[in-house]
Image 1 (cartoon, helix red, strand yellow):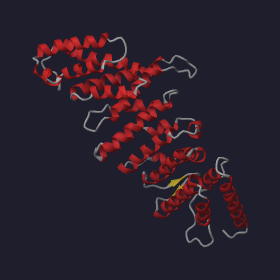
Image 2 (cartoon, one colour):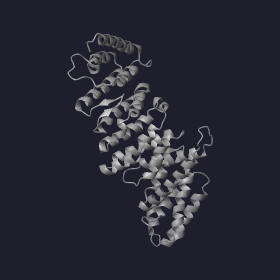
Image 3 (cartoon, one colour):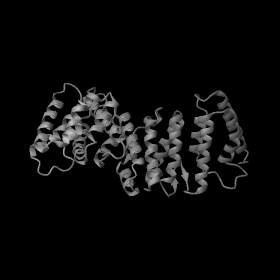
Image 4 (cartoon, one colour):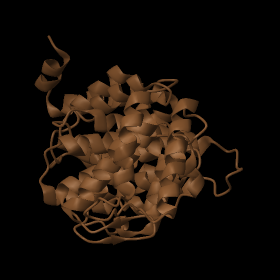
Length: 380
């Protein structure tokens, strides 16, 4: 007979005794979490608020999650194990999930306060514990949408704050990426999604990072940025951060310094950012009048960037150069180019990067010299 059927047939007194015995076994395990024993404990929890259950057993139920959370650090190196633990914890009704949410939020908040203030502090105990918690949280976001998910406002704010914690950036980015994927597929109404996106204050966390983080050849920061701005653009909130010069300066760094995936995310951010505000963007790096003409010009800019910097096929690059001349300013253009000097420089700098093959760099270099000569003659 299946374990779930047997447990269902037990009276409350026997269930309590079975839970106590399983909890003691879980606690006595010398290392990590015995998933089979955890599953029995979770199945023996009440499915709803335990009216009529004695206070000591409510306390015992809560103690289950204390044991689980304290042992996550032993499972940190195994995503498969963390996923199985998250699935076991969150598959047995709303009461169990609510208890775990409360305990997790408190535990993560407490660990955040224990993180070393000094970047040179080599005490990695709290760092490892936070990483384990974030790994568990990430796995919980991977669970199918029918499961409860640990996405309280406080937990999400804590999660975004770890983006600026040395040693936790990658774990925070990966966990946020899992959350954004869940949010995209969960089918919540636009108002709820907008509230969730705004409560993250994600741009405040990204903007607090030094420029060196955006110049590093790593796509995670831009993946997080792209997923966030895409959700925001599709669900309606106006984001004033896209009207900030720092927003575009940091995005330009990703276009100039990044590898292919990073640059693809950056071009996606450019496209999505225009959808996140109905207002004029007027900064040294970005001039955008929220018009179809401007959107088309930056769509063309993105296509040229992909052709010249990402794809780099000689024939395609050569064919694209006349289009680039028209985009950046031509005597035959009926509408002046709104591509700023900063964004033009970004494209050219990326195209002339030493990592680009020499034939492409020479071709773009010759085009640029011809373009500058024509401009100096007053023909553009």
